[in-house]
Image (cartoon, rainbow, N blue to C red; front, side):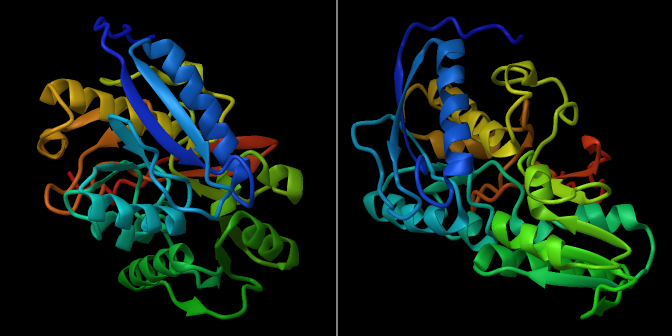
Length: 312
């Protein structure tokens, strides 16, 4: 385990999470992980409010603000942070427009949606046609736009019918589960939802590829925050939230106050248990972190991160 910080100062970290509603599956995991990290760190107080998967607000009276889970909710809260002159650490909104749309007010730790599909396309290493099932919302649209661009660069044809071809499912958890259930005779299936443990409870997952932000054993030794042995039973939404919190605390302590945190973060090149961290110094979008490809075969195991996604 990484050494516990020695400072006795306590920072108040505010976060609105979906403890109820459509995103509660992940919001509750994030809350559990943040409470465990609070106990490990010993210098912070985490204040959690339920956004019910619908509302957008920022907790008051806090030194550090963490965003919610979901691109849509993060977009709403990003506007509030910008208009109120606050800084938001984004751990749950991978949409490209969210990551680049609030310069100076939003720092992202997770791989942007447009780069999600790259590990699967790189792993394919062939020009077999690819069908895509796109879900609703901007996250799915931006993921698919990035996948189509990357497929064209690799000479991979995009087709409508997945029969005999590869299939990429890009939507919400529920949309991906339904798409996999309905698909027959696809050559290979890759679903974003397959990157979390509950996927195998909803559908026959054998052989299905998943894309996620993190899997145990895929990150280097962390320079900031705890190592992954604390959280191996949790999915990546929880891990990315703890990484954001640990990075935020590091930057505030380095800056000496809650001011100038953006400048500290913009210069930072480091690792957490979540993986690499490096932001665009102008927009705050994440450049260093890479999505991880896994496959179900009895259990979900990591294959390899995409080397071509590295921006360093």
